[in-house]
Length: 232
Image (cartoon, rainbow, N blue to C red; front, side, top):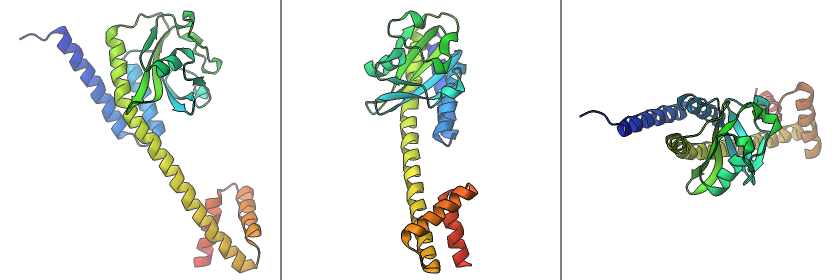
């Protein structure tokens, strides 16, 4: 029985999703996952740019991009409901524009240098019924996005959203754990200095802080050195 066009499309979509899923699984940090998603999505969908914005309070912050200015990462932001990408996040559904700048909802972010792109397709990133961000693709030439392209980016977003939420949570927990461990080490180092030099807690903390600044090292590194010297 000959393969139908529908079957070919489904196989192509499954191949794309399998490739992106494998890439995400192989990545370690949140930054690596974001970079892999944008690169692979742009390549398999044959787009000139792919960008991911993650929600932080009421703002969508640009976290990764293949085509926009790298210096805009972490700086470019949209309010929920602002711009085409912000509207996709607000409404929870895809938005496509063959000539984005002509759309009344469009908002130009100069730091991204996105004026080189004409078309834009944005879809929300939704995990467990909650908006966590948005992903968009852009092309330099005007482009009418097909239903298949909108569907494919929506599926990619569905696959990526859960992994991104887990990666964000893991990074937040890891950062909190690191902060708690650092605090414990600094407290221990302060105690050693107080006992060794007969100084107050405030003065011992000031010494650690001054040493960190003068040597351009972290307070954790200074605390660990003090503790190690005491144990030798």
